[in-house]
Image 1 (cartoon, rainbow, N blue to C red):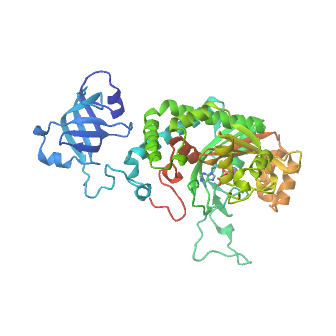
Image 2 (image 1 turned 45 degrees about the vertical axis):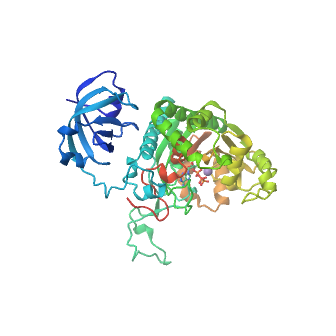
Image 3 (image 1 turned 30 degrees about the horizontal axis):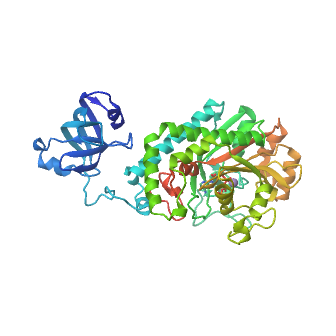
Length: 477
Ligand code: ATP
Ligand code: MN
């Protein structure tokens, strides 16, 4: 007997004697046909039971969700819908699944219901397809950087620098919550805490990545980041994964080139390697679209949408140009935007980003040279003294998917900026050192991994593209 995965069996070119396969029952009909799946592919293999020679007791236990060990022969199928099937010689029930209790029945469940059953939702076709694509996408990301001379850099998860400025942080402490030690001013004395100072979960590995880029040249991080922002949107998680390349000697143009090339590579990779799962998700979306009014329907099917990104140049537009477009746009004049665009310098909201991408340019957009006062302190100041070399990549349906910049490499300018913000220079002593010793032009960006998985799979809610989402009021599992 030889062990096979369902994927291997479905690809077999000839009859296979004495095969062994283990998996879970998807459906069982007419007391004869098991649709078996083991996670290796979205497709099931049909296993045909010889029910006259199978005891009533065993037949009763072949229910949706049960795990089984099947022995038999792989033959050409006479039925429709599959080219091969297994003629079962023996079936062993490994783990029963009581159909009265098992939540994942072969029918359509709501996404909310499945989130409440996040430990079982991976057994549905939709979630298994999404999570296989998530896995392949991760591999493609590593492959892209490895092919291009980058080193994988592991940024710390617990950080002592509170000047990252990317968002609200979660604190990490072992102090007694009920009775914390206090200093002479009555504040919590973090000197007595585990690390001897206040520490948090990281919101970004960028500052540390800059240190490594200044010696290894090209590095990238790919790890979890945490933001305690109370934004209950379909695009925000409290724990999400971020990819952050950081490259010595790259200016903003090279940074934009890198983001575009990288995104095209990984999307093309899944188009080539996740055909079955994408086909399934595409069909799922088309079914969903049918219930929407005509004007809300998407013009492109999922794979066409991905291909469109791969095949077309991203439109590069300065903040100032974008501001003019938005200011003079119909929705702005008709006061349709929740946040009106009147004064140069306003931060752009996702409604504005989506207008630019979906209505105006109808392709991915890279916005650059943002007003300094709406961006982080470490972004390089332009000669105009009021804009910085920032860039955001905006995607249809998602809005911002990448945020990045050329970093300020001039010590004096950086010090000025820090001072103006009221940040204590001492807090950033090691970051300033990078500008004292062998400073160089350098750039990088952060890509939100889940937003990319959302785009790649067409899932509307970010909670459905990470295995166990962490959001406000929710950390079950
Ligand atoms: P946004 O304005 O959408 O909240 P941001 O400007 O705070 O994002 P950055 O600090 O630039 O985001 O982070 C880089 C990338 O990380 C973003 O472009 C986005 O793809 C992703 N990202 C940021 N915050 C979250 C979050 N809470 N959940 C998931 N992804 C996120
Ligand atoms: Mn951003």
